[in-house]
Length: 210
Image (cartoon, rainbow, N blue to C red; front, top):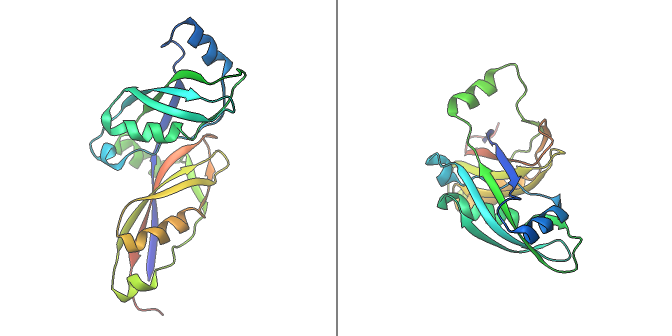
């Protein structure tokens, strides 16, 4: 059995839009402070279609700092749900004694293929470098049925290099959980010192054991 993991890096830029609301809302935006932010996972369909752009969200932050509502104001349709899913995991320091509604802008930017290839072959260290990788455990049922193939797992890596989220984006259903379980155990050196979205690809290949 041979297993191979590859890394595809997608840079995600996050920005708070402080000029899209009226004066009272501006003051509330200034009073809020992000204490935990999660970068959106770039949708595979959007990557294939080379869709980039900004998604503007109307976000309600509760008194305890949790996001109770995130509604799309505008932005490319293929990017909207990823933006909503990410922002719902954000946490804030809310000095007000009530819920606050603000606007956030998340900007999605894909690296050009040529830039990715250059980064991998240049002397410069990539933003993410795996320092600990784990091979997935081949599911017994999948082996019995002779199931092989690649599984793409979208991950989020925090500033400390730990995988905070992992979910299968493609691949056979019988292989997905094993790939996700392995991806969660990866560790990276993160030169960006910020949350980064990336994709790990695991290749499940059946072969004679030595």
